[in-house]
Amino acid sequence: MIPSGPQDAPVAHGHTILVVDDTPINLDVMRELLQLGNYAAVSAPSGVEAIACAQSQRPDLILLDVVMPGMDGHETCRCLKADASTRDIPVIFMSCLDETRHKLAGFDAGAVDYITKPFQADEVLARVGAHLALRGRHQRLAEENDALLSETAITARRLAATVAHEVNNPIAFVCANLGALDSHVREVSRLISLEDPVDRSAREAELAFLQSDMADLVRESQEGLARVAETVRALVHFASCYGASLSWQCVDLHRGLDSTLSMLSCELEQRVSIRKDYDGAAVRELECLPAELNVAFMNLLLGAARGLRGDGEIRIATGVQDDELWVDIVGTGRPAPPTGSQRPADARAGGGCDSGLLVAHSIVDKHRGRIEGGRDQTAPCFRVWLPLRQSQGSVR
Image (tube, rainbow, N blue to C red; front, side, top):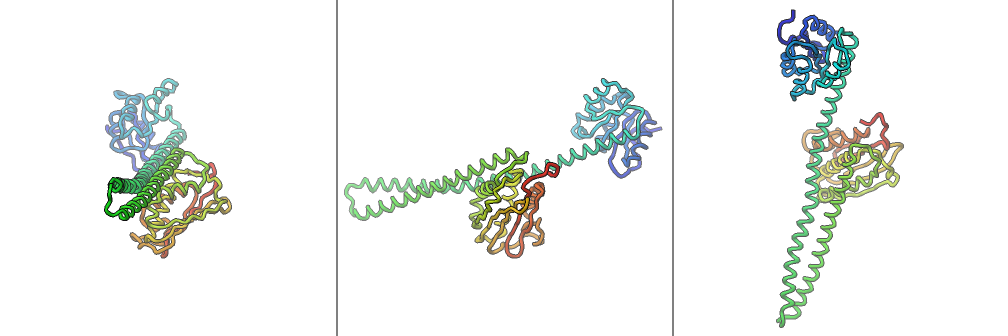
């Protein structure tokens, strides 16, 4: 006889299955069957005890009898699905009631499948294996989604900081110029209002200086506002890429690189100069996830800039070889001292412990590409290889 309360079979390698049935012989048969499939079986003789067991042991799947005294299978399943800690555990009903209406009632209660008694061993193991595999895929997708959300949050913070820097600096500069212009205008008004100046030549010299300086202030302010406008345009391009980021698009790689450089112009110009050597043949449309690829190049450019002391140059070159497009991001100048304890030859270290460079590798891997190089003893040097087209079955 099966004593009251959940019972554990000897632990096997593999998933844990909770079997719920008020008939002891059915529990014994199912436990033995599951052990043949290399599953660890846990049993409970009632719905109440099944809920307690599911909450404490979190099985990978539940085989649940429909007809039980007290709390039946349907009510038990609804309770499991109402609990956040157990709602994601797949439930397969077991019953001798094989009419369609009984099966539909089981699905309405939240079950994913329905097995009729008497059991067929091969069928039980096949259905259990299929639903465990499906749950495993769902869990992996959830983990990948969490990782993507985390990367997206990091990128969003960096992007917000970059945009704020790109916009705030010119605006602060324009505001300072406007303050100087206001002071100059008042001084010009004062000089003009003088009816009988003591020194006419001094007044004219001061007016000439103010006129020249005011023209310079206006020109510099216009340049600052033009930079703000360019940053906004780059941000709009980034936003349009994110709108299409869930689907593969054919895009102009050079435009994506230019918009990324625009977004980073202030930060990069404070560290290095930029030289572009784009190959016209590489303008071919590249099949990619535009937003993610822009983020990869953003992180590589920042990693390269941080690998130099501040007075170097970053050369960005592109080209096509066979069915692949390559992008070089090469720094020249005095290298910045290494941070952390990474190996210089390790391409995935990318010249530092910056997680952004690991994100870049992850994105390029997703595009079935690769990143060669990293940081050597002289300067950062990356070469990104990307296939021009993604085969339907290979895109991850």
